Length: 184
Image (cartoon, rainbow, N blue to C red; front, side):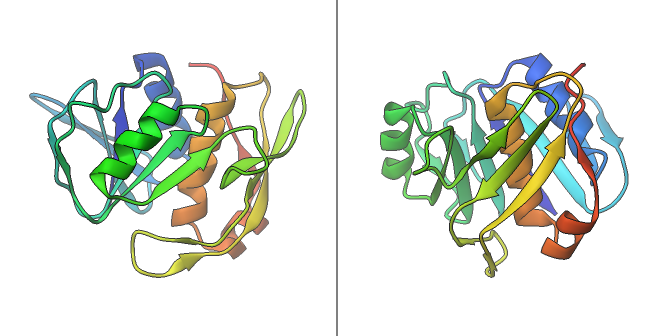
């Protein structure tokens, strides 16, 4: 079971990501007094924090919102991996300080996760280099087409695709139509 921590995400984008992931996984969201699950399949725990000093969850994927401040995090699990927007150099410096692997996402050809193409109703998202998974193996470079009716926020779409890259087998990604619902 993978724990995904959305750090600094607003509620609308969190709900959008949760709803789209629940088409592939059982997404469980812990709350103060209840836990709610959506979808079926492999279980993901989807938590969100505006700030946190310590994050211990193995394995853990930390997905950082573009404007999130990471300076308050003092410790994080060594089995964590972080996804961040490549234009956020301050976030990169903080993630390097924490000593965990980082995955840059964005519109640059240098990014690990980027768009091969982006059109009105479809995008092709590319994993451009081999990366270690949270489970000890590797995810190899590949591309997946994702269709949508309304153009979603590009960073949210890249984060969604990255989660699919690291959790779904390549044959599932290439056989199954992937659709991203852009409306909450």
